[in-house]
Length: 268
Length: 267
Ligand code: HEM
Ligand code: FES
Image (cartoon, rainbow over all chains, first blue to last red):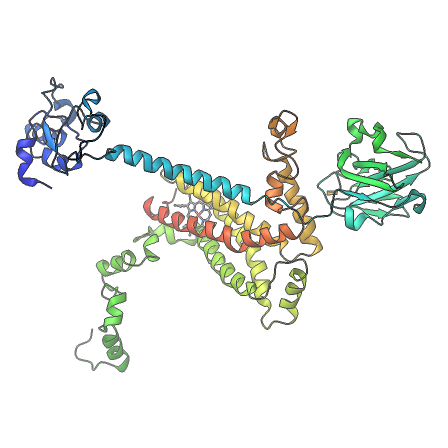
């Protein structure tokens, strides 16, 4: 810091805050030149500091201040415009830089802005990447679609052979409550209360959820416990080779009237 | 110091020890036998400096704080230590998780560590609630302590999440279905859960942006049901992510008790 220069570089009445940090401490030395000095003077006279502040005088012509590189610039006002004013007017700027011109390409303020901008962008990108990282592209889960064998392999009633692996009961009924025909439907084994897996109770002809006691008829309709709606049915069609094809990605909800969909029930 | 009596071996050893370079390089203050040195003990120790230098008399009264915050912290330390020990035996996979837990009871000497971890966890949930209750009843959430109350709310959530994630790890029926039920609530997350309010609005034309395979519940479970992905995610969150977060917040919490003027005074 060029301590010896300080008295000359600041004129009384210069703006209270400078952008050049090197210039700030010396300002305190100038009586009446800035806030602390004013406050001190006011305190000496017993006046309240804020009230003692003189009304802003018309700005004196900007004083030249040497910066850290020793170059003399012109302070136009406090704040960013001082930085912008460090070089001469843009119109006068030559197209190519003078090799002797030591002024930085970026002002400190612009550089800081750029750096913070880049840092924030990188942080946001890292955050987004972290979020995306949590969603893998391949899942080690059983497929949503599967072939369940020939219809002739099924007797009347609830068939549990796919419950463990694919999470469906295949039910063969002589007369469906919605389709009013004989055939197949595939019930998802997920309780519509909070997602436990109910048990099929043969003797009581119902599905009973162990978690909070919801009960469902073999049709899937709920009749006891907290479950708010019937079990869902999955798409069931015949594949080209005559097997049952179950597609869990297509679900049919009774309460939405979707069980009437032709693919919600396979007539057979 | 009694000058007339001959110094015992213990005192001489102590005097020698506290003059060694090693001792002096660690402790930058004399014995805490004056107000000044006692303050220095607190100020020159990175752990102790989180604690207020002086306490109000009411602040150490059991009937004022119930020591529930202190007990919560104690239980957190117990859980950290016992949890660390459990990690030496527990493998978070479908194949081993349950049998490792059984093995901790059957084959590991002092497998009681597991019991301590489990009971300690239940106890910590209780003490944290009671601590919050006492802070509320003493009005200690009022300015200037609103910020510490907020930190506390976050720590309460983290405590419950630690309890929730830990609950899955034994991988027994209770665990699996409890987490199935619990994580299904995440379906109803506003906007980010595929059955939650507002999520239907997030779509590009016909394509829903939030569905069962990319919503909050999926992120939690790493799958569409409670399976191996969920077990691993819960394990990592339980053993690393959440404890780290709550430990940092505890440091802030204690520091803030100090900065807000120590434990609040009686009503
Ligand atoms: C995660 C577990 C927590 C731990 C380990 C903890 C620890 C502590 C400790 C040791 C104290 C000193 C006084 C005392 O022991 O009662 C304290 C004070 C305080 N805690 Fe907690 N805390 C926890 C959770 C919470 C929660 C959930 C809240 C409220 C939402 C909360 C709000 C506060 C407030 C406001 C104080 C200052 C009380 C006063 O000045 O009287 N803390 N905490
Ligand atoms: S989850 Fe089936 S009754 Fe609650």
